[in-house]
Length: 487
Image 1 (cartoon, rainbow, N blue to C red):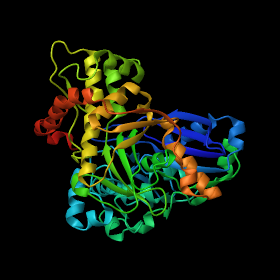
Image 2: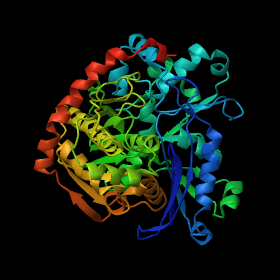
Image 3: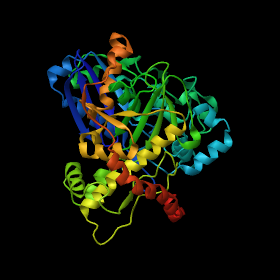
Image 4: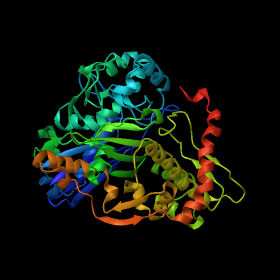
């Protein structure tokens, strides 16, 4: 059996796969995000470790004892700053933190080759500008930094004592030469760092170390090998068999991601498309990334008094698609693709006297769908052909939202059995490859199809006017941004 652990933003998920690839056990533990200032988003690294242990211990002891390898997946870009004693110097700065826009501009001016080497435009979400911000605003902390790790790799350090990372997660730091799959001295220098502060690099299906004796005892497991694993998106792709050139998925987690596997490095930074390494050797991928997706569902459920996402979806369905004029711009944490705007914020527009909770709920489902359609169009502009998307993440549970998404994007959605397990499943498969070897195509197969959702032509027509209004609205609200948020 193989254990996959996914260190997410809202929680940690642990999944065990048996030798046949079926889920033999799983556990979860919640996490919270701290936002001490506008644009800031942080978490305590120790909270990741506590939640990881809780999620693993929620799995049946007999299943844990049978585990033969562990793989890790995690939220990307988080800056975990460690001192010489390997203890965190401050809370980790997360992927959806927007404080470092000025640092991004400075980095690109200082290193004109940044986009060519990294394959990406500098964005506040990446790790590198966060470190430059710390250097400029928290110099005492910066001077104590011995190591910078990504969230899952901090958990790895606690598990094995090794400072290691994989290519897919490291590509999201803005310090990697993505084509060469090595740290770039030139990019590290833009943050005032060098390779001595970086973990050792591995492919996702390589072993980085062995579970420590104390951790193995506490978890009731043997001292098994630990694989490098992958970023949440790359591991999620491995979990649903998106491993060959042209395979694509839609991840509906806290953020929304359209992920396309590629056999070579295909950057397109001008339109805020991400080009990263895959978690598998000699593979890369493109991504359109939206900072708020299922998080918008949780938010509107909370403010309208719904008991949770299920009630929210039910409310929206009573209203129906395009049932009112309301528009929702889902930029609660800023946006990446295609706008690269950390300061923009969400908005409800075109409310009237008949607007109620059901129509607000429907507007939120549509707004996220329209934002994802924007990202898909940018990928198409870059020459990527996408006609069907495998759907993973918590948002995959709603068949009603699937109808709206398929119509807004104009693609067929393929819902896979167990697809909501997401990155933890892929992490377990990377552990299997690391321990047993084998052919990627044989190990990383797509789960059985639970259902498909083709785009409904009538619904596409009904949403067309609102989608056009949504696209026009971004330029209308950006003048409302104020410098007061950028501190």
